[in-house]
Length: 208
Ligand code: SF4
Image (cartoon, rainbow, N blue to C red; front, top):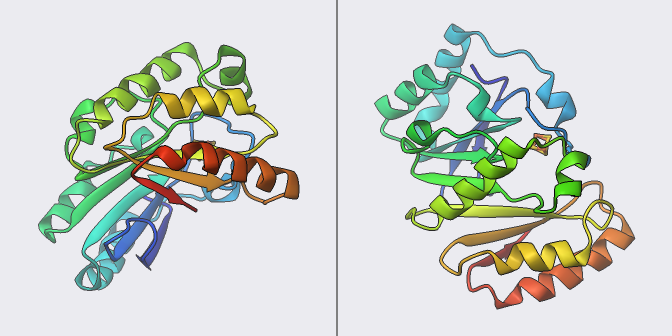
């Protein structure tokens, strides 16, 4: 079961009013993670979740599964509840876990694209397997009707050259979301402006 329910959000899934389900725990250790406290929260009891979700469902048109890493969990019961209500589903994943069958159940897949160099994988706690899965999902996402690639920008862990390489791999049909690392520092903001300029060629760019 998820650890946190946000009843309604207008930003997690643009174009939708969505209920956001936060699943605790993650298999990687991004140095800029601002969900560490949320990750440690225990799951909500199944009955309590059901009651709360029943109250929220009539007011939203979509449900966003996020974390942490939601794919670490058995989400079948919750997916079934969401399907019963005939709501659309989006999942946000770090892309490290190969889970094609689960991802097929979602209308929209949002994937974090974190880095591509070997030395940087280590800083993010990524194994070679995680990196291979991430690149594989990146390729698959191009063929999905709705998908997003999220890139978090900070000068503290990645250099401009990395961002240049990462952006060059993205295809125009995918929605690209550039997001600031939190907390925002002035030097990060400078790098963010440069990366945003570099990404401005992308026809489907959103800035957060
Ligand atoms: S993948 Fe997300 S939740 Fe996991 S450590 Fe990185 S930023 Fe935090």
